[in-house]
Each structure stands twice: as C-alpha cells, then as structure tokens.
Image (cartoon, each protein chain N blue to C red):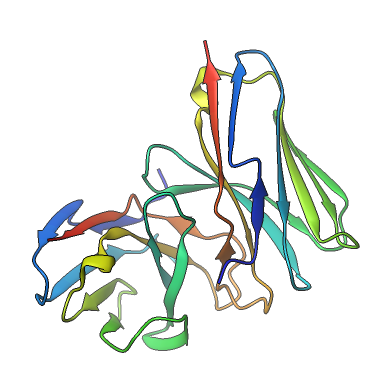
Length: 113
Length: 111
C-alpha cells in the first residue's frame, strides 16, 4: 500500500463526454504526476503538478487538463472523450519536482464506448 | 515516445528458477528505476539505480546498469508464483520526475 488513492476505480463513458478522475497523494508529498497506460503498453506521462502549478506536460492534447489543490490532491479532466482514451489512468505522488521514487495509486480504468 | 525497451516481452519460468529482464534506453540518464505491476493495477517501485552505480541488490532482486551500452538488467532469483507480474524500467532523463517507461516484460512463474 502506497497511501495514494484514486477514484473511481472503474468508469464507462461514451464518446464526446467529459470525465474527472481524482487522486489523493501520499501524506507529505507535494508533487503529483499523471500517466495513461493503454492495454499492453507502458505508462505514458501526461503531466505533473508541483505545489498547485503545472510542471511539465507530455504529448497530450489540451483536452487533457488538471488541477492540484492546496492539500496536494489532484484531478485529471478529459473533455470530448475519444475511443482511444480508453486506458488505465495512474497517478503518482512524490516529494519535490525531482522526486526520484514515485508512489503510484491503483489506477482508474476508463472505458470509452 | 518510449525511452526504454524491455526484452523479452514475455517470459515463462518454473518456480525456483531465476528470471532475467533487460532494458535499453536512448538518452543519458541520472537514474533508472524498475517497477512491478500486478494484473493491470498500480505500479510498485522495486529499485532505483543511479548512473554512477553498476550494480544494486534488494532482497532477491539484482539490478545492473551499463551506461556505455545504455542498458540495464533486472534479475529475480529463486522466483515464486507471487512474482508473476509485468515489470517496467523507467528513466528520468531530465531529472524532473517525469518518468519515461518501456513497454514492459510480462513474467509468468508457474508453481
């Protein structure tokens, strides 16, 4: 158990809808990173939040957005869902921007129909 | 884009045998990490090896790093059925906490 929690665990949406995924970081951690993992692939970095500011972004379109709150929990929002957005979404918390060890939550599995 | 490439993609062994997985990467790194993932769930951090280290041990795990060849290997000794999982290497080229993962090796340990 890493102390990182995510909700919901599973979600089914239809194309064009919007979704919000949530992550609570491990106590004391101020950095949250989000990853998308398609079936059979390794996780791909979406973006990172450090002290409520976006601190780097991967190769994902603007319809992927996020927030980090004063308690360092975080949300990932995806607008205009596409079928290819179906994946496991993982958040990871760490201490500092160059946090070496990242502690992952159990993930949210999103299915877009 | 994927930084690391694991080899083999899949590995099936008997309990008690050793399992070796390899990872190659493209750019210079500060450290390389190995993670385990059970049944499409969250990743568990196994071990981190820094660029100035050549070998590191943690319990039944042994990791080597060859920066001249841009490769790393993970050895699991005396494997158990509970080691069945996917294993990923990850690098952080800019030391910014933005991990780049390989595609993983799926390990099956048969009882």
